[in-house]
Image (cartoon, rainbow, N blue to C red):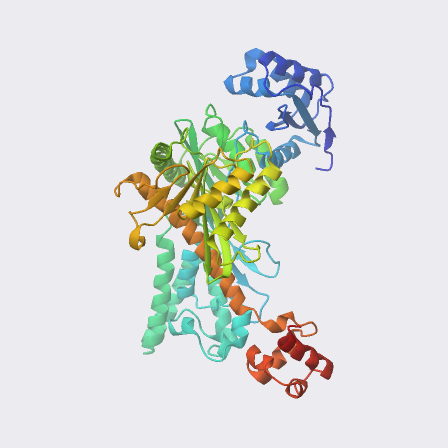
Length: 633
């Protein structure tokens, strides 16, 4: 924000975080007379530096002064003001700029009294790559290149994959990478199953290929009816001309297009571009369903469960949610909402600033747009009901885990550890995290084993993984007052692995973290697992116990994650070429050596004379290559 100014006054920084409402109001009141009557953003901060709340204001002085009037404070605001020990302010050029800055700071600080959008991943697109001689149809995430055409966003990888799969049946453009495309000498399997026209080996000319490109552009651009009619006419012409095989291909393409359209639970042909936001609240929780409509087609939907205080209703949550949702992505021209959004005109102005075009937020009361919103609201209601049922079951399982292992209460964070290697090669350790909301996949971690001699030694690998994990955690948060500390550590292994875990935790002064080993029973049968705890005999659970099933799921997820990491590491090692390690051997000389000798192994066994005979390899480089393979150089 070009006109943004920071006001850094921070009185009473030495006071404790806990205090009374009167203390908070007094501290806030000390700022009021110093504040300008200009738009801006304010932060309410606790004594330990935690940002409690980020808000925006048309007039900073008037808005902050409202917190010093007890009759205007509800329960949530009383708690917030009572915890405030200092404030920070930023003056902006307009209220719209203040709104944008507010959303940016909420995303950065994640204040507990704000509505928080917890899942903010980028959305996938379908791209027609124009930066190549033969355009490619593919999935895309990340930065967009001006030369290419993008269609989306799609709500999830599943939605874009399903559409892309059907599109490849309807429009057989190449989907392979440039590297694969340039080295083909005969058609691949995609051609055999009629999902590619094999331009790589000249089975189609550029004019016909260009026609298919234009067809897919038209379909993704909203002209699906025109495209289908054109295909139908070509099919009839082929049939009339007794070209039955060609007619059958066109028939299959038409069916593929119909398949795409059949998956659109919500479709508004009258709307070119819109996002639908439908909110439903129950028992202090809110679900926001987001549908993406582009060119009249539904590109999928996603359910969000924003974090917020329980006293906020759907309109308040929806207003804050939309602002954060578009903080790092452009808004479409039209946004449909299930409730009237607070400060609608201000939000439209702020979104237009970042999108570069006019943005309208509409709450329709009738017509097909209202019908679409009703369908989205039904989705939100059902998604919230499923989540509440799942969380209830999950809470019962965590209570069962607490009973089985003698914990003080249901664990909020469980960390599961496993290792993987094959005879010491490609050793890797992994941590999986679970809690009341299920698996926390953004907290998963992999550990490449670095300790000399640890590869192949399960105990040494476990020691390294746990030492690195908890040693770093202590360094970053010695007070242990943040949320990333586990209540339970579950080790995939028996008494030996558990003893290693206990030693590491004791050495780091973390004896209060419960550690349990889970080992498969005789013949590695699931259901006969033995559990190991310090100071106790190994024990088993009832084979039909839901808690046992849950613990098995945790162990299996850790096993799946670490095996995946191990396979990737092993594949990378297999694909590595020793020639890459020799200074002076670039891509050209490497290609010449491999073409001449056939493999890196043959290069390793070649004589100095043979190496020198390769084009581009001097006697000096030949000796360097020879020494590398014969003397460890």
